Image 1 (spheres, rainbow over the protein chains, first blue to last red):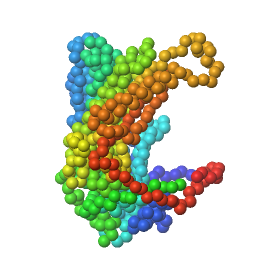
Image 2: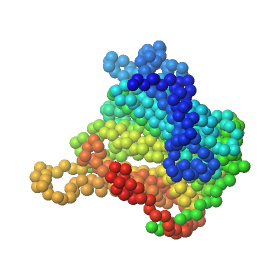
Image 3: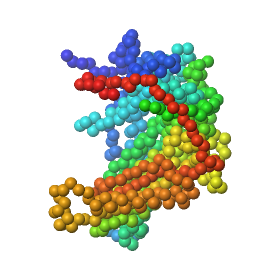
Length: 303
Length: 277
């Protein structure tokens, strides 16, 4: 039997998913404890909503832009860039006379495209269900073996709040269960999941390459034996800062809560690194005046 | 109106401080509430990173402490902490709590990466200096829970302090090796190297605390054992938070003793149906 291909999910919820979501029973990704808390708060789960996107990343077309030349690399569309020049003058054709830290916009754009496609598709399913929001959102990214592609996924439980007006836009949050209940009790409304990725290529100049390989001992290396590797330190800070600023850009005056920051790096050959930083968190909005809890009573459990 | 309905209503209007710089924090909601309960609030997610180089020859043809590695560790740690402190100041924080410390020691470089949340007192007053010390920005790897308990007990964090030492154990002679190879016995050269590294690292951490004007160090975490690139190099790294008494005297936190009446939850493994408590 031939299975008819699913209509492309790009333009909303696939037809089969739409039929399933309209059926009588609902599904949820919540644990039993989180489900119980959800009901206690006044939220009804209406569906385990999901979004997926499989991305191919191509770096060949737009890695540095057309102006790549001696000392003249530029980041397409602007972005973070710092140049590190060789202090030695001409030494040999193999000498790494020029180094730079450069934001890899193509990596960030590809990540953002894949992540937000999956996320938006999940939110489309929630809208289809008439949900007020999606709680307990979990995201993932992994390579699909042998295909040279990356799968992005986002999953969560769509909920409705009986008695509340229909939302302008459904909220989303990584939180569920007691953590979400405490957040609301503390006076914060969940607004949306925040996610941002940054990528910086650190292409070391001669000094940085010597320092990374532990050969910066002579006068030629221009530095003492034990010394800061300034170019790498700067790249490591920059990648974190870029992700942080992107995340801030999604806040629009709200607060980012429960942030996680993951940094990955890999060597791209001697003296060069590719560094990536991914930030996730919950954008929340204060909806009632600040009223701190009394200091909790300390207890010791006797077991 | 219930809190939940009020929260839903709030989502229909834009943020009240749309023009402002939003607060960012990696604290959990429990930690945020605990901070609020002692009069503090998160301000910003802050980081500090430093990589230091050391010559590959540092580990070759020698025994005893590798001074270059200890020096590189101290330099990287000081620089990352200082960078974090500067970020905290720029964000308007009084200090940083819950700092995650990532350390990596390779044969040619040492890496330190710190990430935490800058916090400040809600009334925006600097914290009491205590014993005549200045109210400098503090950096601490204590969780928000530990930070709030510390304040309740009359103490305050001063700084993240660390000490490291890397010691190359001497080789055994051929005859020692031949005599010992079939024995179950202590390897004194390795034990002594570990003890030497321990003493130097702990001493450096405690010296760091004293020079910061602290009374002691809490929450010390240790990393010890051979390095991946050379099994004869014994590494000992100690990291903790230096603290000082800010009240006249220590305030006793008297916890209430509780006995849980819950039965332990028994779970079953799906494949064997064996109980897993």
